[in-house]
Length: 73
Image 1 (tube, rainbow, N blue to C red):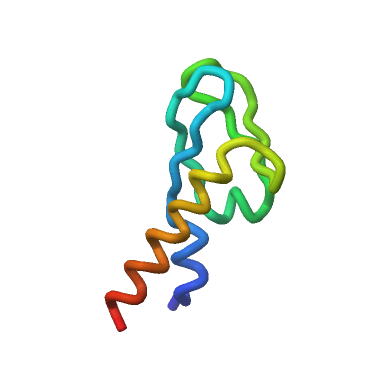
Image 2 (cartoon, one colour):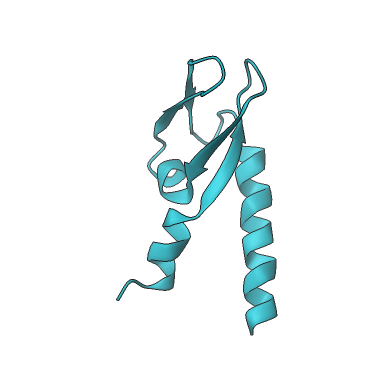
């Protein structure tokens, strides 16, 4: 049975393309691996790294996730 960590890594977050502004989906696992995703709007690669684009979206999603977990307690 998968643990909470496994489920967390599958959770999708929205990453905004810095080039065209299109909203793309990536998982927390993608972010942790610093994967590259391809923008579905302009087809350019988006590098998911600490100093890269879209991580403000990830931070917000993590905060939302933490708030939701607190409500379950």
